[in-house]
Image (cartoon, rainbow, N blue to C red):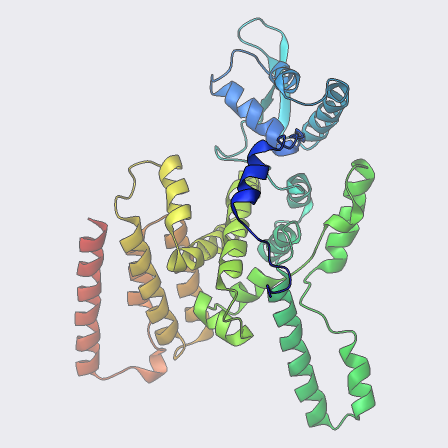
Length: 391
């Protein structure tokens, strides 16, 4: 007998599918902030004969939605345009062709700016309100960027399991009774850095944008934990015991890198934010750099003809830098990490090499002259290899 759930397929099934009427297709055309920004950017690039809001109205008029729904789509588009104007992303200027007022994307934003996530406008709003003089500004911005992404549930469950295991070990060492340990475990969840700040600011955002659901924001700290511990992709997977969800973590880090690189306005991207972006770029590139490099080649064509080899070389230098600086002071380790991240962000592979060459042990534990000579020779070899790779 066939197993449960088995679907038979034979000649009769094929003939029934051929003779039966086709299923009716239902059009689905949602209006979003990302769609409006893309339309306005295509107008600025000269790829459309219409201008500003007229291009959006023309797009709605040509869609396959029910004509009774098109007025509602126009109202939704007008409401989203007003919210974009309030955030400073869209501005009203005079059209050079006929002198009438039209819309355009602000020229203060980066060339590849996009709002393709449903809560991208909240990220732009929150980035403008954060205090850039605070030491934790970049980490706070990273937490907000993670909060607008979908929850990778297996990774979050692994983080929660790890936190509970560490708490149980700590409570057992302190001699806490079993009942009290179980009560404290009920309050343990995955890391949610700055959750109170994110929820409070999101409530204010929802008050100004009533169509947003208050449950859409999801604070989490996956990339923040990786960055603060300076972990590589493989090291963090091993620490969290996530051997079967490498693809999920890779996709999540890739989406987060795109959000930081393309959604955060250029005026809000400090040096440390650039460091975090470069660090995520290196993590994704160490596993599968094809998608990231394909996008970079479209934005900056011809800058690097061998990106894969250079990326692998930079990650090799990063592993050596971590190993050598671990024996030195914490200040030299942080300084070398920052130089390496800035080098990867700007795709300056020789800078990545120099951060490895300059990172050494503290002066209190200088090696002998013979060891210094060997280190100098290795440094020269590394420089020569970097020149050959980037040539």
